[in-house]
Image 1 (cartoon, rainbow, N blue to C red):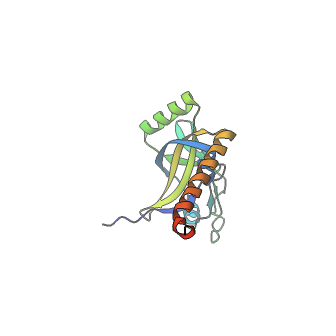
Image 2 (image 1 turned 60 degrees about the vertical axis):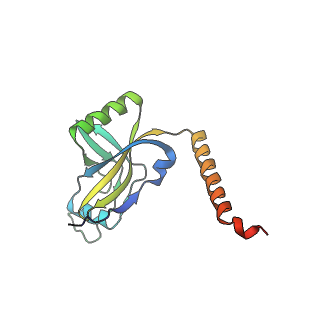
Image 3 (image 1 turned 90 degrees about the vertical axis):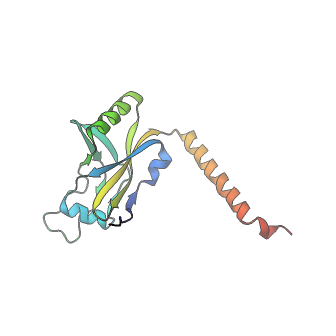
Length: 158
């Protein structure tokens, strides 16, 4: 059986700008019927969302999933906390790193794996300071300028 490519539904681009990504992992997410239909349609937002370990479980907070248009009174609450599925060993490892080093759990993307299940790419991240962000922007601009110069080298030389 051929596996289908992952369909990325939403990305948290701001997370890569605001944090140093140390490690990432794939988590399952518990969704209701109308939520998964909204997620497949791409009606979600990861901005300002984060993960937290509470009561021995991993929870995703602040992810906005718009109500399903064709749903009735069975529709879900858009901003509710959603449970993430990870193994017990992974949960213990993440919990110890978050407590000891002051790291944060940030979702990077939500995607549909093999056309069936919704997954969240969760990152263990450390916050950047404002000068770190400026350095990253300067490096990116320099790389872009060098690539542009290499690409256009033959046009301007005579």
